[in-house]
Length: 276
Ligand SMILES: [Zn+2]
Image 1 (cartoon, helix red, strand yellow):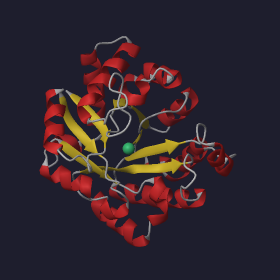
Image 2 (cartoon, rainbow, N blue to C red):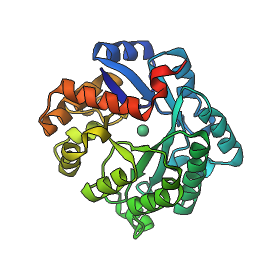
Image 3 (cartoon, rainbow, N blue to C red):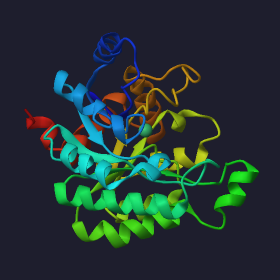
Image 4 (cartoon, protein in one colour):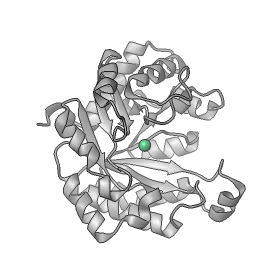
């Protein structure tokens, strides 16, 4: 069985067909990310999780929506977080890539507030971290010298590590040092379709060497379709391509990669085996 550890299902027009193709590709569980189009719609993934036994959900306020993390929105998130089919809070984190993102201080305040909600609910977090490395010159000028990874890891150290709870670095796109520090903080590294792209040599090196008990795979659908489907609308069935690619990087069979990533997901989210 394969598990898609991170997908956005809100906007698929024909979800029953998408889910049927996922099942046919061997995908037995999906973690639908509940960021909606902002806090007003962050419940939509959970709505799906209540309709489909193989879908579980998260809820959270994406860093690009951090300016909308009002006390009311955070209170709604705390309510969603308590739902047994809500496995994690996220995706949350820092995004120093887009010129029009909320200020760094606004992003960090929303992140810290959501870490507290996750800690209260005793749920893991799923992290979005995007640096200004490949951003436009204007965006780079706005964020530098701030470093999203340094800021993220320091906030985690301060506000999350003391909880003893784990988390996921979603669509891991950092380097070996950031991977090592994430692993040391108790995080799983989840690899998306971009690991298959020819220029992703750093990500590939990390995916090849991540400890077997800490690796996950995901689509991040509808974004980042893996090769050979790059450029198409990504969907959960395509996680099979990422699995095959990561398995070959690690010199193991696709079946073995599926088995270890599935067992990791189940270890991280025991509720996904027993939830009502
Ligand atoms: Zn995502």
